[in-house]
Length: 310
Image 1 (cartoon, rainbow, N blue to C red):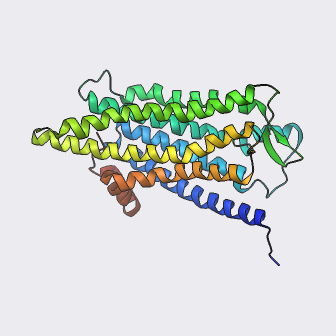
Image 2 (image 1 turned 180 degrees about the vertical axis):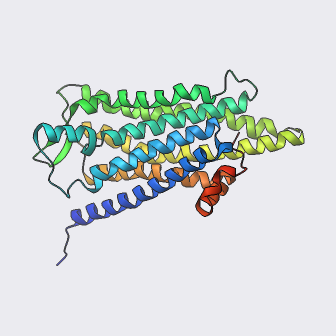
Image 3 (image 1 turned 135 degrees about the horizontal axis):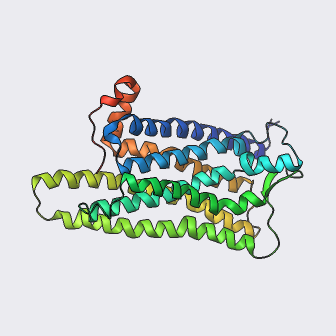
């Protein structure tokens, strides 16, 4: 006789998957932050955006733990205490706050690449460190405001032993779920596709014309960085769209928060947070070199003579 039912086996498998991805995400994203913050020559505007992305991904990983790994290993409080825990710890609201920051950060990265490639000598248009003081807080503020309805409405359901959104009757949930698909899915991907299409045309079509030797190195560097962020964007689309579509299907009763299908889509979102730093290392020699130095000689990291991506 089997020790576990199929549902129990699936839940255990998903917890193992979450645990593995959370570990990878926390370790790899921490390395990204350390590489940039401890290496003076890596502190470019582009790399600070990647640090913001890494911080958002770590928030996702941290708040996956109480929501999807430990949720049934303890007795969840009920009443007002249970509701507050759902809002700020076990309900996943901070998870989705970090996830939205991750998507918005990718838009900022696309904008940075667009102006860096098409207007390399126009400082007024390029994203600078001074502008990041407003851009990065704006990413987090937008995410908090976008998730605000869920912070208000999520409550602990004693019958299901799960945190659920308690929407009033009417069109509200339908509009909000469609809003997620449009604002967090379709709109960002459309903006990034438009910006990167211009960047790709500039780098791979226009730059095919004869240029000076000094310009070739700059173009080669920008191509390498653009390939990296393009890969990150494509992975983001593949990992995010199933979750956003599943959220819309919740309204039609074809799917429900907490079931196996919904949880699998959250696994994909967690996967997205875990693979971003791996993509940096595969696509960027600078990151690979700095990670190697950090792991082998952490005390000498500040002296590493590595130039950040243009």
